[in-house]
Each structure stands twice: as structure tokens, then as C-alpha cells.
Image 1: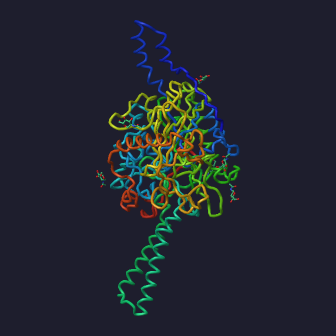
Image 2: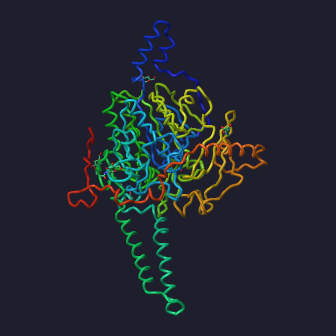
Image 3: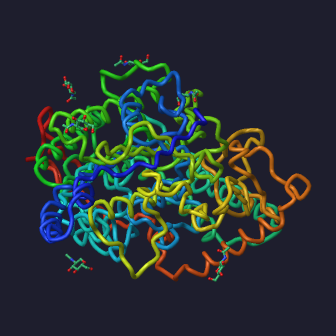
Length: 602
Ligand SMILES: *[C@@H]1O[C@H](CO)[C@@H](O)[C@H](O)[C@H]1NC(C)=O
Ligand SMILES: *[C@@H]1O[C@H](CO)[C@@H](O)[C@H](O)[C@H]1NC(C)=O
Ligand SMILES: *[C@@H]1O[C@H](CO)[C@@H](O)[C@H](O)[C@H]1NC(C)=O
Ligand SMILES: *[C@@H]1O[C@H](CO)[C@@H](O)[C@H](O)[C@H]1NC(C)=O
Ligand SMILES: *[C@@H]1O[C@H](CO)[C@@H](O)[C@H](O)[C@H]1NC(C)=O
Ligand SMILES: *[C@@H]1O[C@H](CO)[C@@H](O)[C@H](O)[C@H]1NC(C)=O
């Protein structure tokens, strides 16, 4: 990775700004009128491309020499590449909630207190509250045509199957095509399951305990040491049978109940098919651009790639040098290219702001039982998805807007995926909500060289609902201090992840607390290998004191909000299950309304 940083103090070449400088006096009124009239035409289209679980070590432009990502590289070459771009959380649901709103997940109630930090059931009642303001809502109010194509993962319903209280169309999108949940291994027929650990904990462990209890009681009864009523045995056997039945139901019904495609409020394919799925999503995206070529639009293309279950079409299967994961990444890159090509073809590229990112770092524990790597690369960085080592939160971040952003820039300053919210609001002419804290910062001053320093003096890294680490970039210094209050216990200990549990957890015996906090200077030690001590860093205690003060200030700014990821809001609720009535039987939850091989929507 190149360490060179170009920052060019460049004047924006926005036409009305030029005009403003040249004209004077009486002409001013005319100019103002002209400005007011022409301003809407000057607002860029917005295309946001988000990969799922793609590591910062995967794209070629971030230093990968063997994965082929020519289209992502082309995008980076035409704009600015951020090399310290940070996800607001190392997990899908909270990271995406923060991305949509420009606010830390904890402010939205989108941070879990339990082990599970994301929705795994479609029929759960939690989600992004409609009281939150999304960038899609702001832009829709500014007259933008808005669409979400792909993954949502921020809830659907609250109380019944028709309220759609968390649905994308209730958050400012005019059009939605994609999966309301997330892609999981369980969505692919014949693929293993991500829930092996959950099964062990929820099924096999209780069964073992119950079995052992029954055995012990039977022995004690046989030896006449205690009197055990027969009812107890019957009860224990029934309990074991119930657990087993629930387990089998879960295995059998997971796929149709949780893996389906929707178009707006309608189910269009249940269970979803992986055949040409990326092609279908891409066609939807390019179709949306074509339909809206004449007016400002916002497209959020949220890929299912490169999360497991890995899938790719015939043109990409077995073509890369990195197995199914590489195939998937190269198909993702192809899709990015299709979107860029359509913008070129329609003459929209110069006036379209395109952003590319991933929702968090690569999932390093994603290894198949056969030992095949199904997770990506976080480059030189430690850890990955679900923890706050740099590998979990450093993500690709590329912004291209040829009319305004100079090509070939590289910025090392800390930036966040929450920054997209204020940035797109500003360029679209929307004002930010004044009644709440917005944690994201407008990126344009940094990109245009009006400031050389990130506006994020402090960034707070949460592991679900627990404050895990604080990053401090002092205003007048190059240092980037990062203090960990706790770190995950990797297992095996020498590994780079929590392989026994598939992801790292955020509390209890899964972590080690640090007092004083573990301190690194990320600017000198990006691999986080050498914790500082008072001996190696004379300002050690001063630095930690200021970080603690900032953390206290931040904590004081949090308001009490409903917990959208409480066990009650996460668990499967039968009365919220969306189910597509098929011709055969209305109970089978199966249908296919996809028309293949053509552009699917008008
Ligand atoms: C579903 O819930 C919404 C809001 O809670 C309510 O207005 C609506 O009447 C309910 N619909 C049905 C069919 O119960
Ligand atoms: C996938 O797309 C290819 C070409 O685009 C087509 O030949 C094939 O029939 C499609 N497969 C399915 C299952 O629709
Ligand atoms: C890719 O390789 C796998 C394993 O060798 C094979 O099962 C599969 O059919 C191949 N797919 C294609 C499209 O060639
Ligand atoms: C886009 O901008 C570039 C550089 O500013 C210019 O050379 C090119 O002609 C523009 N293309 C269109 C279609 O306006
Ligand atoms: C490139 O990506 C592949 C797949 O994630 C990974 O195995 C490889 O280590 C990466 N190369 C570098 C230099 O990071
Ligand atoms: C914390 O807040 C106080 C009061 O607003 C302020 O004076 C102080 O500078 C803040 N501390 C830090 C480290 O931001």
C-alpha cells in the first residue's frame, strides 16, 4: 500500500461558483436568480455501492495483487481513496444502521447487549426506528428518486405482517428490490450452517445436561437413595423431545422462512434462488439508473456479495485464484463495472457521486469444515469482522465525482462510513436534522483540501453495546492514539480470530479487560502489535486521561432509547412471518414471481 498522500488545495469547479466570482453589481440579482434556477441541475446523482464482509485487503487498489478487481480500481483511480476509512461497527446490522443515519448505533438502539448482534430471523420485531432520519429520506424530500437494491438487514415489521414499520420504503426509498434480511449459509441448499455454535449451545448442550440428569436420577432411584416421582422423568423426556423437534423444525424451515426476495412490499421469490442473483440485482440497478437519467437519483446498491453462502454465476465460478471467495469478489467487481458503464453510456459520470465501501472487515473465521477460506483478507491488519482491531473496522472507502473531486487522491486521515450521511445531504442541498446528534462529518472540506485534518478528533469503537476502544487524533498532531478498554480472547490463543465461536463476543469470559487501557499509536503501529507503556510513551497517562474525558463526554450525550436488538425484538415471532401463498398450498411459503432474463421493472 502506498504511503504517499496527495492533498490538493483545489478550487471546486462548480459552474455557479465560477459565475459568482466573475460577475458584479447589478448583475448580482440576475446571478442569484440563475443560481436558484440552475442549482437543482448541479446536484449530483448519488450511487452508493456497499459490499458485505469485503476486507480492505481484497481490492487491487488496496494492494491485492492476485484478486482481480479492475472496476473497483478504475473507480478509485478516478476519485479519492481513503486508507483509514472506518466502519461505525464491525457488524452488519449496527454498521448499516449508522451508515443510513450518520449516528452511532448505540444512539439508535441498534446495539445488542447479548452475544448476537444482528438479526437472524426475518420475523423479528426490531429494526431501524422510523423516528430516525436516513439520508434516503433527506434526499427524497429534495426531489431525488431513491432506490435500495440488495440487502437491507434493518428489520421489517413491528406488530403485524402489514405494518412494515422498519421496511426500506418507510425510510425514504421509493423502490426496493432485494433481501430484507441477510444472506446466510443456511440460505443455500446443501450448504452447512453458520449456527453450529448456536446449535451446540442451544441444542446439544441442554440435551446432554438433561440426558445426564435423567441418568443420574435413574441411578439414584434404582439404588433407593432418593425418591423420584415418575412425573419428573416424563417431564424431562418431554423437554428433550421438544428441544429436538424445535431443532429439526429450525433446520427444515430456516431457508423458506428467512431467505427470500422482495419487490417493494411483495415477496417475489421464496425461497430465493442464487441463480444469476448478482446479474438480477445488477439489472435492477442499471434499470433504475436508465429510468431516472433525466432527474436526480439516489441508488444504494447493497450487495449480497461477499458474505457466505458464497455463490457466483457460470461466468465467474472457478475462474479466480482464490476459490469460491475470489470468484464471488470478481463477480462483485464485474457488477460495479456494469454500473459505471451505464453512467458513462448515459453521460452521467461527471455529475454522479459514486461511493464504494464494505460494511465491515472480512470475516476471518469463515473457514469451511474442509479448510477452504470463505472469508476475505484484511491486509496487514489484525482481527476482523465482529471485533475492533483495525481488521474489523478498516474498510475500503472510495469516492468519485469527476466534476468536483480530483482524480487520484489518497487520504490517510480517519474517516467514517457515518460521514456519507452529512456529505450526501450537503451536496444534495438538504439541511441536517437539528434535533439530534449527528456523528458523521462532511467529507468535502477534506477532499477539496480546505482542511488537512480529519474533523473526527475522537471516534468511539463499540463492540455491540459495549464501548470497546477510543481513537484520538489530536487537532495539532499526526498521532492517532487508540485505547482499548478490553480486547477479545482469540481462540486458539495464537490465532487471529475467535474460531471456537465463529465470531468474537463482547463481554464476560470472552474478553480481557485492560486497566489502564491498552494504548497504541496507529499512525506508527497500524498492525497494533506494540502496546505503549509509560516507559515507551512519556505522555502515556495524559493521553489516557484525555481519552477517558472524551469517553465520559460521549457517554453523557447518549439518550435512553428502546433496544431494537433485545432478545424479545430479535427472536422469531410466528405472527410476523411473511409467507408467499403459492398455488399449491398457502402454507408452503414458496413462490417464484421472478421473470428471468429481462429487465424486471418498468
Ligand atoms: C397492524 O398494525 C398497525 C400499527 O400497529 C395497525 O394500524 C394495523 O391496523 C394493524 N393491521 C392489522 C391487519 O392488524
Ligand atoms: C443465467 O444467465 C445466463 C446468461 O446471462 C443464461 O444463459 C442462464 O439461462 C441464466 N440462468 C438462469 C437459471 O436463469
Ligand atoms: C467448479 O468446480 C467445482 C469443483 O471442482 C465443480 O463442482 C463445479 O461444477 C465447477 N463449476 C463450474 C461452473 O465449472
Ligand atoms: C467529464 O469531465 C472531463 C474532465 O473534466 C471532461 O474531459 C469530459 O469531457 C467530461 N465529459 C462529459 C460527458 O461531460
Ligand atoms: C488477496 O485476496 C485474497 C482473498 O481474500 C487473499 O487470500 C490474499 O491474501 C490477498 N492478498 C493480499 C496481498 O492481501
Ligand atoms: C468534555 O466536555 C467538556 C465540557 O463540554 C469540555 O470542556 C471538554 O473539553 C471535553 N473534553 C474532551 C476531551 O473533549
